[in-house]
Structure formats: C-alpha cells, structure tokens
Length: 327
Image (tube, rainbow, N blue to C red):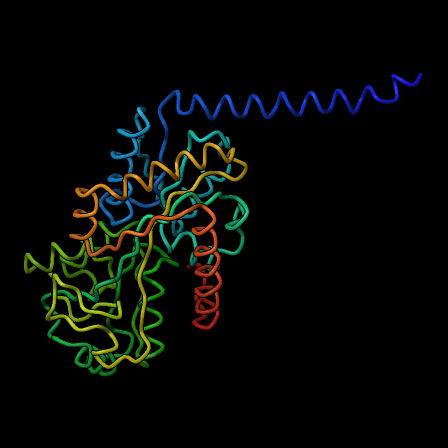
C-alpha cells in the first residue's frame, strides 16, 4: 500500500510538467496563425490610427497578419468586453486608450467584465494631449472668450466627444467644473464621426486628440484655441496650454496601450511586449507618432500595469466628483 500513497502526487507533478511543457511549446511556435487586434472605437479616430500603425509593424515582426477589427460602442466597453471573453491564447488582442480603460469603467459600473482583472497589460505605446478646437462659425479666439460666450449662453453651447466616459468627455466636464460654465455633451462612437459634425457645425467645440484634429486645424476647417498638455506643441507654437490660457491646474490627455485577455501565458505576453517595444524604436513609426503630437512610451508589462492602475484610480475620483454617469 505504501507506493499507492505517493502515486497521486507523482501523477500531479507529471501533469504540471506536461502543462508547462505544452505552454512553452505554444509560446515557442507563437504566432502560427493571424492575430485579431480589436479596437473599441470607430474607424478614423486616433485610437484607430495608432492601432493600425502598430498592427502593421507587428505583422512584419511576428511574421503573421495582425488584422484590425473595429468594435465601437458604449464608450469602448463593447470591444473590451469582446476581448475580455476571448480565448487567452494571444490571438485576440486589444488596442485601447485611456478613456475605455481608465475612465469608462467608472461611468458604466455594470460591465460584463472586470476592467482590472480581465486584461493583461502588455505595453504602454504612447501618450497624447488633446486640442480644444471650435467650429469656425463660433466667434471665439481664446479660452477666455469661450468662457464668456458659454456664460452668456448657459446650456446653449455643445461639445462633442469620442464616447461617453472617454478622455474627451472627461476633459469637457473638467473644463465645465473649473470654468464654471454649462455646456451640453454630445457623445459619438469615435473621433471621426464627432469631427464630421463639428466641421459641419452641428456641434460647437470639442476636446480632441491631436492626431485627428491637427490636420483639420492646419486645413482651416477648425480653430484650435488651447492644448491640454503642460507645454506647447512644436506644431502649434501659437496655441497656449490650458493653464497659460487661464484655466489653472488643467491637464488632460489620452494614452494608448496593447493588452491581452487575462491568463494569456506570460511567454506570449513577453514576446508581444518585446516586439512592440522594438517597433517603437523604428524611426518611421516615431516620426509618424510625433507628427500626431504623441510621445512614444514603451516599457515592460509590469510597468504598464502600474501606470494603468494609477490612471484608473485618478480618473475614477474625477468621474465621481463630476457626477458623470452613463447616458
């Protein structure tokens, strides 16, 4: 009977070794088929643009197609819910931004996934400020003039965003709080649709990411009156920061990152992180991101996780203070 007593521990040990061996084998052969990259916003927005840049570079580095699939809606939660419930095998990834990851979960409290536990952060790709842009018909040329216009017409001015609970929405609400003005929020399923209406004059203004609004400003279709970073942009040196424009302590922006479903094997996470960081060292990619006003970041999965948690807690407090809820 003595040998039987030790049979099960031996069997379990062998099973564990077999599992680890299989996981290592999968990581060694990864990827062996196309990878799906989910972007939780509509085509044409800044998250979409940056995500497609990364998909192209990763396709070349991984030797397999990285196919972008846009799944917009509900402030980015629909696309993220899809990834959270996908197999944790490295073949369904998420390219998302500050809004859906760190802000929207506080606005939509009843999600079908846990915003912290459902994802495995891979790499923080880039950070990007917002431009405060207005339609040409709005006769304001500065933030002080905008505040005066808004106070003179309470509840009449409308500002767009790329989703309820997005970074653009939060920036607008934060501006309302600090400036003491009343404006109407109009959410869209991405920067692209919002900018179409802004150019058409259907809404009055918007806090938009640099990459999508800058070309319209340069083309004279929109007017930029402030930037939300702490320093002016080399591309628009004449545009003051929000703090320089008189709104003390105002700083906002967005960031982009690559994530996978939780429980994805660490060797696969490390491979993706390595290739993403290598892609961020490419001169062409750096120049494109710089032209969009973005700052390249990079780093390890653990560093991204720490950054993500800090942003999640920071914006959660602001959402609560502003009383932002799902519309």
